[in-house]
Length: 230
View (cartoon, rainbow, N blue to C red):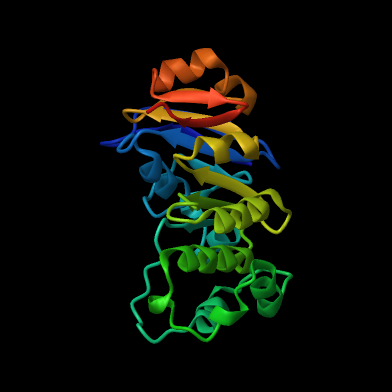
């Protein structure tokens, strides 16, 4: 489904991996490791001839075809029009979804926000707005860059349930949240200093030896929950 073939630039070095159809991925790594840079390469924001999606070279595709195959959801909603309402934003987002806009709004429980300006939404509400947008876009692969950043526990649970549902096709999720990464159960790719240090199954990454390797003594596990070892 997705191949990254020996990609390098000023930040990333010899990135090679592939995902099979229906496989999902978590990208982990410290700040500045190159996670968001890799996401922008995979989705075509950064041009490259090293990305193959569904047996097609990404940079050879039209914008319309590329939008069918891949979508990037940034960590923060950036709206230039201060008057654009959530409903108008979602109308612009609807591309390939089978669900209607009102169905997606109800799914996320954001009915009271639909007439509000996107600029006026809280950071957590903006995250839900972007999640609604990606469901309506319905690309083959959706890349989420820190989808639970700044969310309270209730909104985090809501995002988790959507990420585990069949409302999104294939997912690549960049996160620092080890609990989210563990509970989702997707394959793990760990980047350090622009290089892939780990690419394998979820349960193998969360073996004690690997946690010590990547996080030293900064993380402790209690009943399969992971927290900073203060």
